[in-house]
Image (tube, rainbow, N blue to C red; front, side):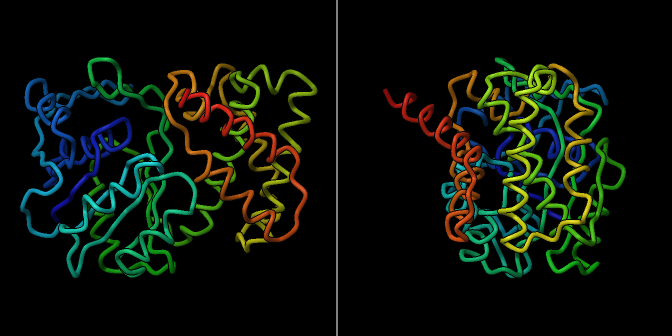
Amino acid sequence: MRILVVGAGAVGGYFGGRLLEKGEDVTFLVREGRRNKLKDTGLAIESVHGNAILFPNTMVAGEDAEPFSLIILSTKAYHLNGAIESIRRYVGKDTMILPLLNGLLHYDKLAAEFGAEKVIGGLCFIESTLDKEGRVIQTSTKHDIVFGELNGVRSERISKVEAAFSGTKTGYRLSENISQDLWNKYLFIAVMSGITTLMRAPIGPIRELPEGKTTMDRLLQEIISVMKSAGAPFTEDIQNNIVEQINGLGFEMKSSMQRDMEKTLPVEADHLQGYLLEMARKDHLQVPVLESVYANLKIYEKQLLV
């Protein structure tokens, strides 16, 4: 199976690199500068699960190529529109598109552009970043990718994706309930990124301070109410499950959105918390903590433009 990974950053570089390391037919769609870097020094992965230096096939948008079997989207949400245009000519009749973006808003956009039948569900759990040399630095025990048909069917094509990841140095799982997995991940990310950016602190000090924990609990409750109103397929113990996940994080754990803010990079405010706020207003729900989180992020974005 021919695989195109859009971007060779902290997420795409890691999972695409692990596929390449195994021997899968992988090409990275990157910008010219990243392409030159990969040609010179290779795709370097430094990970607790094993280091690697790989020299992948690369291409830039617009180059001629036959349609790919699988296209993995690993860009930030604010680059989604550009990514859609960059892959359009490489999407064929039987192409699967596997997005690894946070949230859910991108599924409607991808379905509108390419047809819902081409989009499969995907998410990942990984703590990774690019260092100044362009190396993928992966530090967490978790390096998991989850994928599945949005209708829950174990299809022939999704089994091919499972076979591609089989034998790689990743944690991978074929889910038969990817819709629930996506909502659960969205809930966790929205709370974790929201509270750490609002407090400008890792999760440990927030949990430790009674007022911090209370604010976090209120944010969690608000987002659950919004998602349930939108039809999220949660189990009855979802709130306890998320609290347990957050309590299990290391004291100094930060969200990727918080790390982006510290680097004065753009954030996915509209794609994550903004989308939730739209749903809340549509259903006339009161979400004061979520509004504060979103206001904090939008003020930050405006300061980037000054």
